[in-house]
Length: 120
Image (cartoon, rainbow, N blue to C red):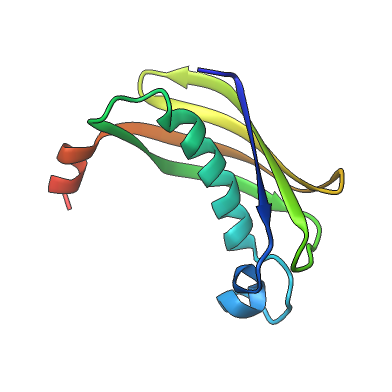
């Protein structure tokens, strides 16, 4: 697996705090920034798994430090810090026009899809 992965997202009206209900302003919501970060880590890890596996997020320690307007591009970079058994730890940063708007440490667990779905 590559040690890093990157993805870009364009902030839509539906991604705002106002639309999400997590705030009253038309700026990128924290839940959507988390989704951008988690999606990038998931895609990075997913490409290494077989058809019976997937990964699920189990922990996120996050700072959302600057607002982002609708229409702006958010660049997300994920770096694998470590893997222990089936747990992968990532450092993630989100930038807009070169300015960091958020950072996180995120953990994902690799699971057997069928067994996981039978447990719910």
